[in-house]
Image 1 (cartoon, helix red, strand yellow):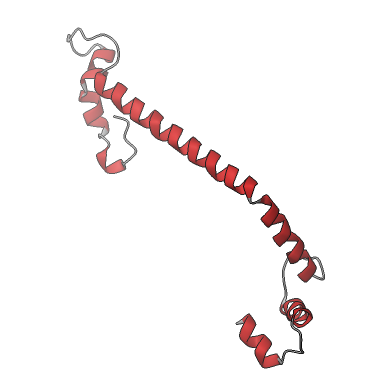
Image 2 (cartoon, rainbow, N blue to C red; image 1 turned 180 degrees about the vertical axis):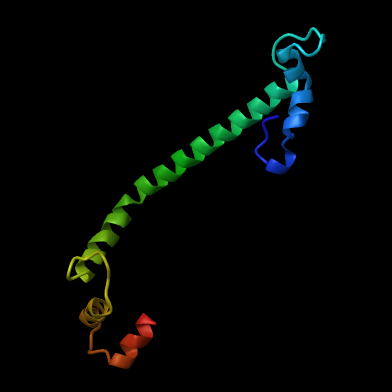
Length: 116
């Protein structure tokens, strides 16, 4: 009954005819007690996927923490270029940063080629 893929899910009518629902609602005299094995299996699979997602997120966060030095470096460089502090690198700010980095004066054509 619990299925991540919508195409594999049962319809409401099919669920109502399922032995587990029938036994829970008293619509059948099957005498089965407890959860249906199929339901337990699907719950276990779902729990496993959930655990996998949690572990993957943990790994991603750890990688971000390991790269935090690089991120901080990039933030400092960005702030050096963003002269007016508005959080955006505007064309004139980028041109100034490029001109400050090159050993000789770059022509407007060379700068335009770098930007585009």
